[in-house]
Image (cartoon, rainbow, N blue to C red; front, side, top):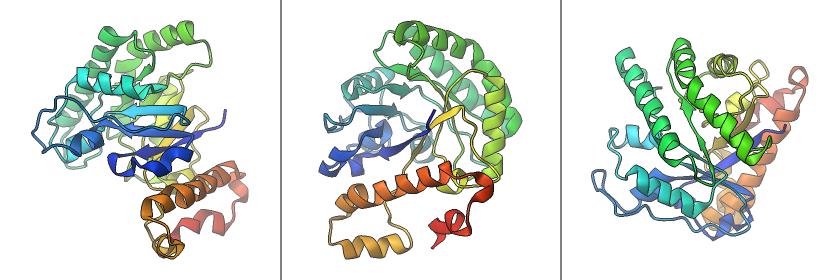
Length: 290
């Protein structure tokens, strides 16, 4: 099964130029943040303007921003999030999860966030399993053993969900399990985390949240086949030579992003991912640095 790379669509990327995209991951915290201060309680989360041609749609609540920028204070309710997801009509939507990759937090805090993640996943499942889309819970942690423990905690729920979606939608259903807190980690650590979770949850498809290109291209740490999708916000070309190319294109920045930078980034990732790992050239593995 080919791995799907999904561009993250924040409120700032929501524009006329996404009309040519086949897929997109929409982030609730970005849309909520566009109309509020950190402690405002919203009446509704603003809805994206999604072109009808985009058939592969996905939703995330935006836990990284909520924890990092808003200190865990969620400005919208579960019901508002569900209403927002329904409007988008996604293939799957993430249940609320609480990132743990901040090295400064204690193990006690990590466990607390894992428990909140588990309770949240059960809440969405117990009360809203009849939604047309699939719910995606996420395994969280900081160290390898954290991920192993949390995968075991979520296993009963994941088995229920997997069985339900298989019966409802068939074998080729959209259900998967997220693996979170992978950003700003070395490629070998990311691989070890993912392999640990895959081993604890056999027969499950996974979405690896925010895996950077440096991990995808690493010849020593290819992602397991069980990881069927990843997402990225690192495609806008506003780094290194990409800045000069954007300026010289004569296009508005967002037009350049979606008509030039995104197709080039997707092609680069797909090409590197398809290379025999032992035969990759120096150019293939260092291209993003020049």
